[in-house]
Structures are given as structure tokens and as C-alpha cells.
Image 1: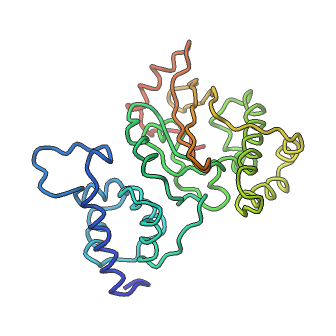
Image 2: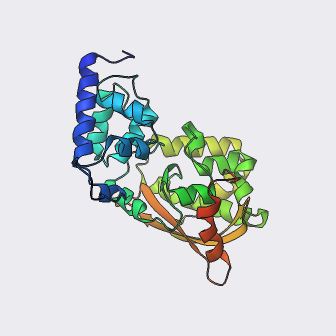
Image 3: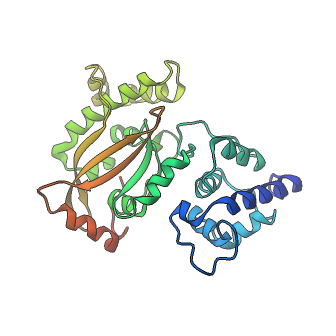
Length: 287
């Protein structure tokens, strides 16, 4: 077995099954239906929610198959609405390092996931205070592009904004200066809220100061302001310019934010957002 003992595989399968059986379909936005004969979720439903094949997930519950990756464990933890302690236990059973809080595999509070799951008619996503995207609903992927594939420092959109010119393609050039200033002021506020020795924030700021003269100049202005709401113009490859309001809901510790996008009043964006469900992710510009 790939890197894991038979005992750990068996414990992992038993734990996944026990967590699956306690989650109600309504908890994850599914309709129970009249023919449901099993408690909690079906195996195929967990596989779908985690982006895994049904065969692969069945193997995991059977205590077989290959050792799950850290990305798959993060997806399973979210699909099963695990608490922070349960998520850490899952990683240890799989003999994978428990991810540090703040990265792309960060634990998301089940209540925030529940809110996201209920936002079926508007683009929404959960990000960290350093702008690492943790999870998106389908409409957010259609609007902003799939942001799940970035790792390391590049997982932060602020990092990509100041180091990769193509990251700005989603926004009109006329808005770039305003957005740059807003990102820097928000980052200063987020870094101040964290511990002064927080390695993630300090590393990100140190890197950007060294590689981006624009960031360094804005950082020297000492502007500080959390982004609580914003009006944005987005260049969508299929639908053209869409103007939206971006609203933020902060977690208790400020480390995570639920963002959702509504059409800006006085524009034709309401109709364009309705088309997102039809257009899907076809020809979407990745941020």
C-alpha cells in the first residue's frame, strides 16, 4: 500500500464512512428524495462533492486504493463538513502533514460552507485574508475562472496581481491603479490583525517588496483599510463587461471571508449574471 499501513487504511475508511452517515443531504444542498434508504450521504454523493471518482471513493471507504493526496483530503473534509479537529485527524490517518492555516487547503468553518452552499443563484467564494481562494461555487468559477489550481505563494491573488501581468486581465486597465491601492491597504490591515511574527504574511510582504516596485511604492504610503465591499468591473470572455457589487462576510477571527457578487444597480449586469449559468466555464478568462 502506497505509504500507509493496512491499519491506517482501515481506520481511514471507517472514519470516512462514519462522517458520511451523519451528514444530511440538506446540509450540503442536496434533495433527499423519497427513495433514500441510507443514513446521511451516499458514497457517490460524497465523491461528487469532493471531485473524486465514485470508484476511488469506494476504495477509500473499503480501506484500499492509493494514499489520498493533500488536495483530496481537503476536498473530502469540505464535502463531509468536518470540524477543524476532525480535518486534522483525517490528515493524520492518511499520514499526510496537517496543512498550516492560511494556505489553499485551509479548513473552512462548516457554517461558512453552509452559507456558500445556499448561494445557488449568485457567484460566491470563500477566500483567506491574504486572498487565497479556498472554495468557489459554480457561478463564481464561471465569472472569475477556476482558482483551485494555484499552489504556494501563487495561491494568493494579491501575489499574482503584483507578479504576473496576465492576472490583471479580468479587470479593465483603467481600474488597475485603484485596485492595486485597495489590495495593498487591505493586506496591511490583514497583516496587522495577525500575529506580528506570522510567517505567511511576513513572507508574502517581503517577497512583494523585493519583486514589485509598484507594491513597494504603495506599501510606503501606509494606507490601511479592509475591503468590506467594492464595486467592480469584470471582463468576461463571452459576456463582455460585467459590473458587480462584491460583498464580504468575515469570519470571527478575520482570517476568512465569504464573497458574493450582485449586479450593480443601473447596469445590465443582472441579465448577464443570469446568463452565467448557461455559459458556464466556456472561454472564461482565468484570473
